Each structure stands twice: as C-alpha cells, then as structure tokens.
Amino acid sequence: MASSLTEIAYRTIQQGRSLAGLAHKELSTKAMELLAPDVVPSTEPVPDELLNELRRSLSALQDIDWQESEQGLYPTSLLFDIPWLEWAERYPRVWLDLPSNWARRRSRNVQDIPDTHDKDLYPDYSPNWLFASQSP
Image 1: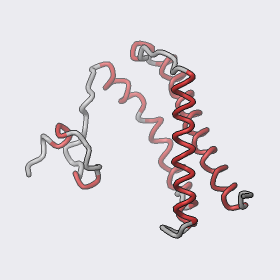
Image 2 (image 1 turned 90 degrees about the horizontal axis):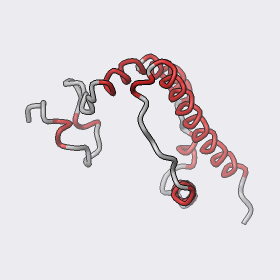
Image 3 (image 1 turned 120 degrees about the vertical axis):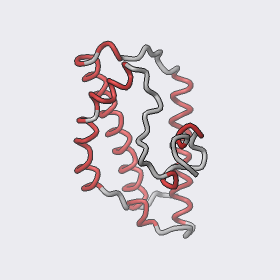
C-alpha cells in the first residue's frame, strides 16, 4: 500500500528528530572533549548488529505509533503535536547546564536529584533512591 503524504511527513519528522538528537550528542561530546577532557567516558563502539537491531526496534515503534493513530486510538494530529518553540526556547539551557553535568561526573554524583521534585512526574519504574529524601 502506498504511503500517504501524512505518513511520509510523520516519518520525515521522526527522522529529523533522530538526526537532531544525534547532532546534539556529537556536538556536546566534542565540547566535553575540548573543555572537560577529564570526564570523557571510556566507551566502546556499538556493534553493527546491535545498532541495526536498535534501528529496527525504533522503526517498529514508529510503525505501531502510525498504525494506532490510523486505527483511531488517538488522533493522527497528535503525531505532529511537537512543541518546537518551547523546545527551541529551552534548548540553550541544556548547553548552559553542561558544566554542572561535567562537575557531577567529576564527583561521580549519579544521584543528584533536587529535593523539590514531584514523584508524580516520574514513571512508576523510577528507582526508590530517587525519592528516599522525601517524606511519605
């Protein structure tokens, strides 16, 4: 069955989002290598087989998303409800937070969560230590 223009637009947007994420990761890693080389993690390349499986999984999720919207489980318009202006407004803060991120890496502070967080904003599978400092 031929893809509709709407489906092509949806898949194009998803690819664009993936590319934007990859570009951010590459640029922020280069910034870390230049400005905070002592916190660059030691990594190994992802094997091609695993990378291809991840791509297939992502594509399958997008297929399900599209099919469920086509079946009427939710409006197709939700697939395009992306707050681009809000994202663009907040994105510079991600870059401004990089030095504090690097400081947390240096101190190996992997549990740095503000005391003012709202447990209801986190998924059910969030680790218990995340909420240990809050009273019931």
